[in-house]
Image (tube, rainbow, N blue to C red; front, side, top):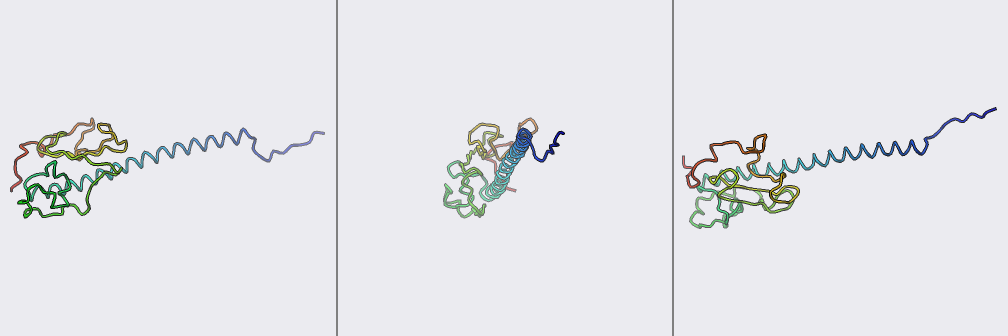
Length: 169
């Protein structure tokens, strides 16, 4: 008589296969969450640039110009950063509630005026993005929302004209 062997457990091979499948699924989920986190941080950086852009517009309305490179964006929250003390009476700031001294990754922002990306009549504000390297695909600028599908900046009348023109209305 043959004794019946009832199978009550998993073999080692079966356990290893299940563990391998679980590890593969975990890796896929982790990679997707990491990329979603990076995208979220980039979106937060763009939102910060939107706040700076709004502050720049108010500054330009009051002083009839964008901040110089020497003043930088510090002049949006610090009147003492003005190069010309006579303009202090027209300065109606602070234009930003909180100082913006770095990007989401703790690196310095690059402010350029006159701008180089879309034209000299506008300013450029650039974050080197998550990789921290200048000139790479993950760089974030204040002009990103004006990019077309192919990555070029769309034509916009606000980027044309003489940089010394005033905003008087």
